[in-house]
Length: 445
Image 1: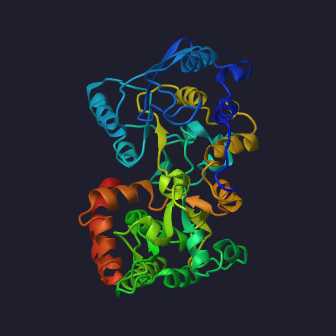
Image 2: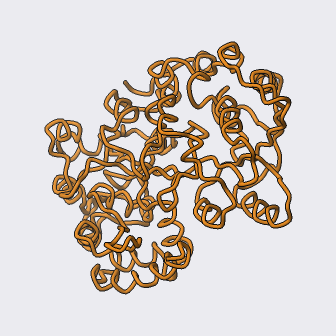
């Protein structure tokens, strides 16, 4: 199905079940409590596509939605401190020291570990309970510890957007594959043969000098986001970056076979020129990218058709895919009755039942936003269900340390290995003590 057309107004209306429709089912009474919401996601609402509405500048329809939630809970909702999540985190740090209480809720990503370790936000395991995510659409359930909501085994965040199930896929240029006489990746996948070996075979077959000047101008894989491609491949090989040792200490484990094997594989493809950067996406047959990026004009405006498929799986695969999205909601340490705030937020963004309807219908309406952009039925089905378990590796604290605090950092170290040909074992062995020192200090171990 090439570029499906849909009636956007109908989709928006179906997608936007208002809070008032379930008001009679709820018996919350917050006694007029004021709930102050801080978010950098000002234009993500349940009433339409991103950008259609603004929490801080609501039109009549969004005002009615907020009013319905206020009436449902007998509370007053205020949106405060428009701006970034990082600025909000710094304000929270200042406010707690000063005895102030600037907001009751915010969204966050990379700062979650520091706020949790410093005692600025609340642990939520007892607040949420084991069945909390049973009321969420399956693709937004954050069970377990590899979900972006935990720090050192404790839960500090919760799903508070239901905006983007942003697992990272492989886009493949179906038209280029056909021109080169290569087999469809869908057929390879259907036979259970979509492995690293087959991926490499296709990458080499696509890479060539098409104009005879002695330089490759067509490639197997375009490096679109090197940082994330390292993660994509590590996840596809079942790798984990830390472990708990026999003494209960969290230690980095970068010399694990799954990690070294991944580096060796990527290093060879890069050295042979079949996976490279500095080229246009249209010069390659395959690209690792967020699945919903299919709406990007590069996949729509040219003559070629693109397909979407889960990443190839390595020899140590655990059947996983890079879940990518790290955004969660959190509750500051000073907030009383945090579950009340969580329920108000859930009703505002309509993240779970009873604030949304039937799960299957909800998911169909959610994904129909992208229906116009996909080029075939297989792509649409994989977007809805990759058939793999989304995980967040590195964890939030690993991500913060390796990408934000360590020197050298993630891109520099893995760039030395993959792009420059440095030894994976010796390079990672030299980096581990740097990472471990930061981790020990953060966790006080």
